[in-house]
Image 1 (cartoon, rainbow, N blue to C red):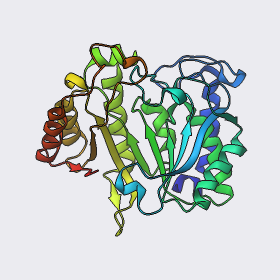
Image 2 (image 1 turned 45 degrees about the horizontal axis):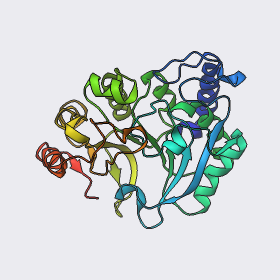
Image 3 (image 1 turned 90 degrees about the horizontal axis):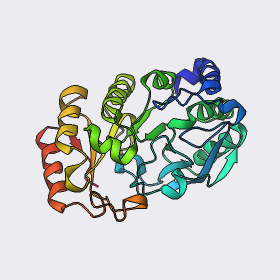
Image 4 (image 1 turned 120 degrees about the vertical axis):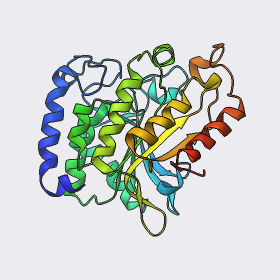
Length: 295
């Protein structure tokens, strides 16, 4: 977080907080006054809500190491996918509301636990609140890689506030076509938005860099979930990453889809994908020369 060390973090915080007055910090651009606790799609007003703070050993190997990735799960989401596996957190007002000072303490507790990184899960809609807390956390000694673990539905303009703050971007690349993005995320512009966001993330941090122990220290790591009937557009996603982002992009082609939340009973996504779809996507990623997470 070299921006923090140069004093730029305070300016980023102030700019982000000002935008909460007519919120446009994500592509939804709801325009509500979150400073007055009004809520839009994400359901979060002035203060962030936290569901859990703990070491996590189920993330990608470059993040986990021997001491785990220090996850802070934020409540709410700007996507609200119908198949969400964390709907109890992302689609509700679960968890506890936290001030900037409380959130900073949560960040510092991750460092105290000895985790390899601070992994903020579903951060997009609380970008301003995270920056507000980081100012305090850095003042009190926070010095560890920051992971931005998001759904990929990000405003490039807002992402620029994170340039020099985030060390490791870990976005999803969920859909490459408008129709499924509209049907399952109410975001027909998701493919266009996510691709632009990933390009901006890569501009900021480059390809994933690891230390001698295989731990990520900086860069881009993309997740792509293989969907039933190939609805995620795996071949297009792999082509985009290899040809337009970088042939050295680190990707996790995930085979963990299961029907959750509103997907149960949906004839389009109410079943697990054919295992061959994942095998094909994994093979395509390897053939394209991408750096493929081995799981």
